[in-house]
Picture 1 (cartoon, rainbow over the protein chains, first blue to last red):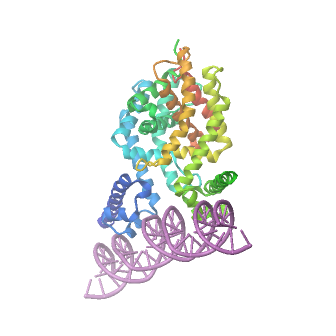
Picture 2 (cartoon, rainbow over the protein chains, first blue to last red; picture 1 turned 90 degrees about the vertical axis):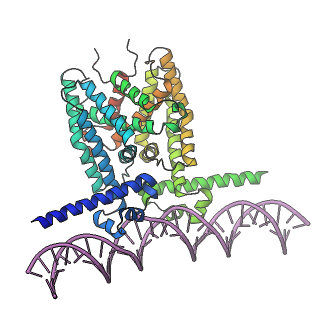
Length: 211
Length: 211
DNA sequence: CTATTTAATGACTATTGGTCATATATGATA
DNA sequence: TATCATATATGACCAATAGTCATTAAATAG
């Protein structure tokens, strides 16, 4: 029964080849400017073939968004540990997020794209898959926060899952700010790291001056 | 010399008519699905005419983004006051932001679009205009925060302008979360207001349990 | 070796953003 | 009023490109 399996593998391989090509084209030219012919050329396949593996340009781009999320979450898993103190875990996640944005700027941009700009007018199956991709690692994050609440380190008036989502989205926002700071004159000579660390400082202690 | 003035007015009027039509089409169909012919029909003009007033579809959409920002900033100006306490001003801004998202959901979505999803591959003149639109009101916000720092209410280890940008972008992120919470099973039975108020709670006091 | 299933191709279609030669209306001039 | 000049509007047209599908090629089964 080795033939079906090999075919399966080859199909998966081809799918990945297409994704690799698409990624390079998207990252180089941007979503709008990249054409399916570009991608087909880069993948050394005909355009028709792309559509055997992905049903639209949008779906191709989504698949890359999912890759981005997977990489990020993988980085999280590596640094998170139930043994560490809650606040350290949160900081580690933050630092991993920063590393992600630095090491994979293109993936990061793709991720921000999907976090921020989906057109409520039409949510696709892919969107749902993307949200699902987030769920497991989010559960891990919630667990860590819940620990912190239980052992009295974190405030207990906000549920762990709300905290998780709020922190996540605040942080995404700040990373986006960091990556676009060149357009804000105020921030010209501030480093990305400074912005992000200040963000975490605020999360930790709040805005008020500590007596 | 009334004729040139009248012509000027008529031109401005037509520009606005086109924007109104574009807005309705964009809000109904979304950026991608809306066509220039749709907009021309709605405006009862030929497509060519649209291009006498706006040089591309993108620019049209931008102009609507600017409208959105203007409305929001106008709402801010109405609630901010140098006489109020800093923290109250911040809360007022937050509440205005929430009202904006509720009262003008379409403008809000447009704003989030521009905040989050610009394609670094090609920044247009319009982008710069959009960022400029933000600058004045941002200055107002910075001033308020600076007051808070000066009179010892707010922490003084982060500059007012960084604070302003960080708070702004965190809050945009959270509002986006609120508006998409239906896709997060965890948040199904949480209200938008609760999420946003919790966000401000965290900003005020931080994550740590107070003593 | 032949038949059948599966995969790949690229010419073709439909849609749509954007252009431009032409037409129309408006206002100035005499 | 008649004529010219200018500003504005039109819609047929063009180019680009996402997506399709009849045809071809390759792989596998019998």
